[in-house]
Each structure stands twice: as C-alpha cells, then as structure tokens.
Amino acid sequence: MKRLVIFGLGKIADVAYQHIVRDNQYQVVGFTCDAAWIPDMGGRQATHLGHPVVPFEEIENHYPPATTEMFVAIGYHELNAVRAVKCQEAKAKGYTLASYVSPRADHGPWLEIGENCLILDGVGIQPGVRIGNNVSLWNNALIGHHSVVHDHCWIAAGATLGGGVILGERSFVGLNATIGGEVSVGADCFLGGATLLLKNAAPGSVYIAPGTEKFRLDSKAFLRMTAMPALGSRNK
Image (cartoon, rainbow, N blue to C red; front, side, top):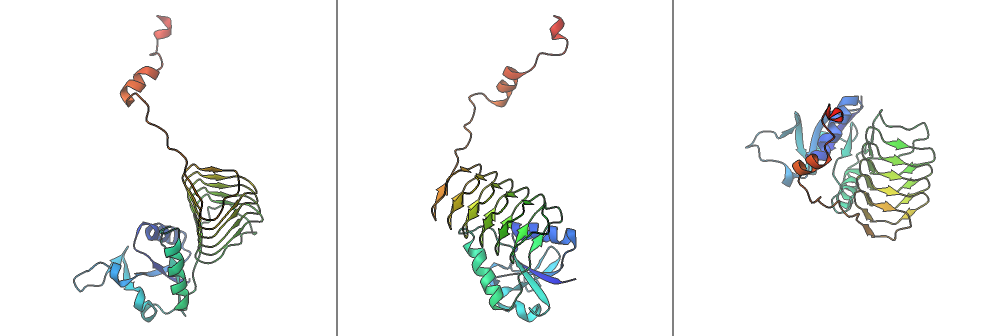
C-alpha cells in the first residue's frame, strides 16, 4: 500500500483523513504544515489524529518523496489560491500529489481527473467529463456530461453542473448551486450557495443568491397556526 502524508491540520484534513483511512486507499504515515502553525507541545512531538506532525520545511527528511506521496488538504481560502501554491511547493520538493476518489462516487471507466483531487461520496461524474488538478468535489455534487472543471476549483455538496459546462480555474461553486448546460464560467468566479447561473460568467464574477427571510411568527405560533385538527375532531 502506498504511503501518504497529509498537508493540513484543520477540518479539511480531518475529512480527507477519515475517508482515506475508511477506504484503505493509502497508509497515512503523518501530517505536515508550515512550522509556524504547529502547536507548541513543550518539546514533545506534535501529533494529529494519532500521527506525527512534521514541519513542511523539513518534511522530505522524514518522509522522502521517493517513498511517500502527499495530499494537500486545504480549503478554498483566497479562492483556492492558498491550496494551489502549496501544491506547487510540494511538487517542487519532489512529491507526487495523491488523489482520493470515493468508491461510493458514481462514475465509470471514463473518469478523467488530475492530481490532488478530492471526490467524496455520492458525487456523480457523467461521461465526457474532464477534471483538472487540485479539484475538490463534495458529497452529491453532479458534474454533467462533457463538462470541464479546470484546475484548483472547489465544488460544494449538492451543486449541479449541467452538460457541457466549462468552469474556470480557482472558481468556487457553493452548496446546492446550479450551473445550466453549456454555460462557461470564467476563472476566479464565486457562486454562492443556491445560486442559479444560466448564462456565461466573465472571469472574477460573483453571484450571491438572497437568503430566505425570517417569517413574521415564531416557531410556536407558526405551529399553532398550521397544526392539523386533532384526532377525532372531524366527528365533532
């Protein structure tokens, strides 16, 4: 089994670790991050989820790239640019960047993805789709046929890309957002949760769907107003 070190100590790293371990795809041997972010353990070896944490600045001395791959588990900070930079730094050190594809994702032998991709449970990837490097697809996202997802994108849970969509580099697609078929989205775009995009978007565009407004009644009053008649009341 291939050895793997995970870059990151946050929530994304935890999610990636739990899925990788669950599916026994790699042997996780340690974690790493920039030295400034490692907690001070009073001289003791820092650990995370039971594994040693090694400064990224010296990671190759502990887990050589000849024997260990790396997965960069960072969120969509600065429209995925932080994760993209760290991937470049890891490759400069000689590491192969691993990808995780859940066996519970829905795809066929046509699956075409790059390095450092995270594809979680329930993701649907239809024929003709091409997914670049460093792309994260969260639970139950759907990528329609013949779509292209370029490098460093983040697609949140429940999002839908229709057939023939082109999603530009570093773009973010929020929870339950929908991009209609044959729509082209430029690089560095931000589509908030529940966004509906039906026309092409220029690079750097931002689309935010309005949130649901609070109802005038509180929950108790609302339930009283909407309660069904009590059992037996129809006979009264």
